[in-house]
Picture 1 (cartoon, rainbow, N blue to C red):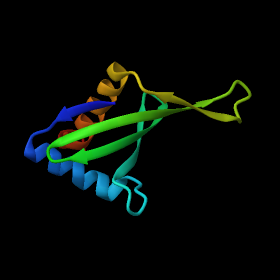
Picture 2: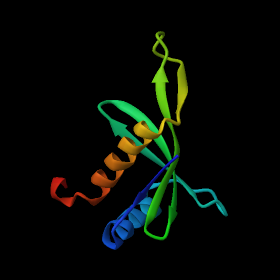
Picture 3: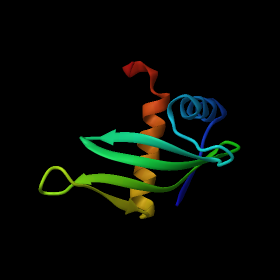
Length: 98
């Protein structure tokens, strides 16, 4: 798990994006957000708290060598999670690329 403090503006932008574009089960505060990085697909499991974003863990989708079987790798290393949360924040708050 990794945690990142956000400015009020970035927090609201991320919260709005997650409400609109992430999956969330009823009565569960965890958001599931898909993120694509250089052709790799990740599912991020995110918890928001006042001006903080917690990335609990991530799942990386990987196709087996047969090209049809999909398997998942759980990512829990804090340095990788920190990089993924930075990419998520940059992707959500950077409106100049839209």
